[in-house]
Length: 95
Image (spheres, helix red, strand yellow):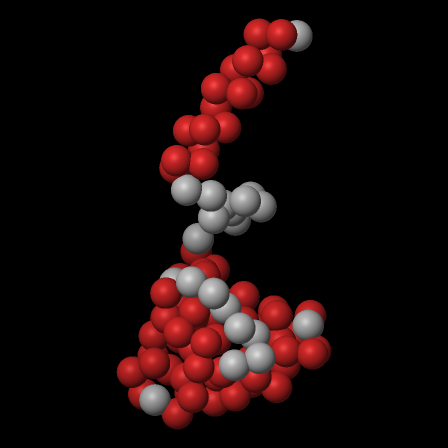
Protein backbone atom coordinates (compact mmCIF):
# COMPACT_ATOMS: atom_id res chain seq x y z
CA UNK A 1 0.00 0.00 0.00
CA UNK A 2 1.23 3.46 -0.84
CA UNK A 3 0.34 6.14 1.69
CA UNK A 4 -0.11 9.66 0.36
CA UNK A 5 0.01 11.96 3.38
CA UNK A 6 -1.46 14.78 1.30
CA UNK A 7 -4.66 12.83 0.57
CA UNK A 8 -7.20 12.28 3.38
CA UNK A 9 -8.73 9.31 1.50
CA UNK A 10 -5.32 7.63 1.31
CA UNK A 11 -4.72 8.31 5.00
CA UNK A 12 -8.12 6.85 5.89
CA UNK A 13 -7.47 3.72 3.82
CA UNK A 14 -4.04 3.28 5.46
CA UNK A 15 -5.51 3.70 8.94
CA UNK A 16 -8.12 1.02 8.22
CA UNK A 17 -5.40 -1.55 7.47
CA UNK A 18 -4.22 -1.64 11.10
CA UNK A 19 -6.23 0.76 13.28
CA UNK A 20 -4.74 -0.46 16.56
CA UNK A 21 -1.35 0.89 15.46
CA UNK A 22 -2.15 3.50 12.86
CA UNK A 23 -4.50 5.62 14.97
CA UNK A 24 -1.82 6.62 17.43
CA UNK A 25 0.67 6.99 14.57
CA UNK A 26 -1.68 9.43 12.83
CA UNK A 27 -1.95 11.54 15.96
CA UNK A 28 1.84 11.57 16.28
CA UNK A 29 2.41 12.37 12.59
CA UNK A 30 -0.02 15.28 12.73
CA UNK A 31 1.97 16.68 15.64
CA UNK A 32 5.48 15.87 14.40
CA UNK A 33 5.00 16.59 10.67
CA UNK A 34 3.07 19.87 10.47
CA UNK A 35 3.23 19.85 6.66
CA UNK A 36 0.80 16.89 6.76
CA UNK A 37 -1.36 18.04 9.68
CA UNK A 38 -4.21 19.43 7.56
CA UNK A 39 -4.81 16.25 5.49
CA UNK A 40 -4.42 14.08 8.60
CA UNK A 41 -6.93 16.23 10.46
CA UNK A 42 -9.32 15.94 7.50
CA UNK A 43 -9.01 12.13 7.63
CA UNK A 44 -9.57 12.18 11.39
CA UNK A 45 -12.71 14.32 10.90
CA UNK A 46 -14.03 11.66 8.49
CA UNK A 47 -13.33 8.98 11.08
CA UNK A 48 -14.98 10.97 13.87
CA UNK A 49 -18.06 11.68 11.70
CA UNK A 50 -18.80 7.98 11.23
CA UNK A 51 -19.98 6.22 14.39
CA UNK A 52 -18.56 2.84 13.34
CA UNK A 53 -15.16 4.24 12.33
CA UNK A 54 -15.01 6.41 15.43
CA UNK A 55 -15.65 3.41 17.67
CA UNK A 56 -12.94 1.50 15.79
CA UNK A 57 -10.56 4.46 16.19
CA UNK A 58 -11.17 4.72 19.94
CA UNK A 59 -10.81 0.95 20.37
CA UNK A 60 -7.59 1.08 18.36
CA UNK A 61 -6.13 3.75 20.63
CA UNK A 62 -6.99 1.63 23.65
CA UNK A 63 -5.51 -1.47 22.01
CA UNK A 64 -2.37 0.45 21.00
CA UNK A 65 -1.66 1.21 24.63
CA UNK A 66 -1.63 -2.54 25.33
CA UNK A 67 0.57 -3.59 22.38
CA UNK A 68 4.31 -4.09 22.84
CA UNK A 69 6.62 -1.61 21.16
CA UNK A 70 7.99 -2.90 17.87
CA UNK A 71 11.56 -2.25 16.77
CA UNK A 72 12.30 -0.26 13.64
CA UNK A 73 11.91 -2.47 10.61
CA UNK A 74 8.91 -4.38 11.96
CA UNK A 75 7.31 -4.04 8.52
CA UNK A 76 9.75 -6.57 7.08
CA UNK A 77 8.16 -9.71 5.79
CA UNK A 78 9.11 -13.16 6.95
CA UNK A 79 10.77 -13.69 3.56
CA UNK A 80 12.97 -10.63 4.16
CA UNK A 81 13.93 -11.99 7.57
CA UNK A 82 14.66 -15.44 6.10
CA UNK A 83 16.97 -13.88 3.54
CA UNK A 84 18.73 -11.91 6.27
CA UNK A 85 19.45 -14.92 8.48
CA UNK A 86 22.01 -16.73 6.28
CA UNK A 87 24.13 -13.61 5.84
CA UNK A 88 24.05 -13.00 9.59
CA UNK A 89 25.17 -16.59 10.15
CA UNK A 90 27.90 -16.21 7.57
CA UNK A 91 29.05 -12.98 9.19
CA UNK A 92 29.27 -14.77 12.53
CA UNK A 93 31.19 -17.66 11.00
CA UNK A 94 33.74 -15.29 9.42
CA UNK A 95 34.49 -13.57 12.70
